[in-house]
Image (cartoon, rainbow, N blue to C red; front, side, top):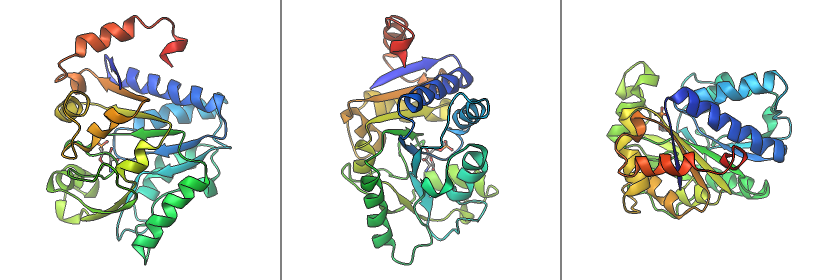
Length: 262
Ligand code: GLP
């Protein structure tokens, strides 16, 4: 796990966008795993700008989103499907038919989760997975005690996540769905490369537990310690509880070249 600490989230977002852009230039037909929430918005807006001025193209990209609320229609303003169109897909040159999001309105949820896993396999697997992290250490919607070998399935949100996400539902926790569909931790760990972004002091405890604590289903993101290619992009507040913060900065500042940093 490579932990990279930036002075602020704007510089972290630029670096993460450069990382994604370089991967895309190397493989224009890459399979991208995408996240929602507040955290990736800055990364997406940087990628949208690069796409608009012709530096990168998503025309050959296939994407799979991590998760979706159960019982919310894809056109509902709170669905992750709508979030993706509003904040990314409608602003880049991706072919919308190559984008995939779990179907929160599926009649047969188990079957639709199995089909989602099959579509990922049929696409050749995820080349680059983008992640945020919940304040309780979740990735996707894999809440604490999720199996570290889990696959795409339905989960029930914790009260902490319901409170955290109420801001997207007019501040009303009762409006937040209790059930969600999410790629499993086993699904996420199969991506070739993972980048995780975390900003703000509210993520500091989860980030420290993920990177420096034991691997435990109580902190689902700690499973990333078992993945051979993970980069963590942090701002200073999100890094504020890391014991080895000075070491991570020292290591990064001595990387041999800018190229090697990507
Ligand atoms: C949400 C999403 C996650 C996201 C996390 C953090 O509930 N399911 O994919 O990474 O929680 O969200 P935010 O970036 O808004 O803090």
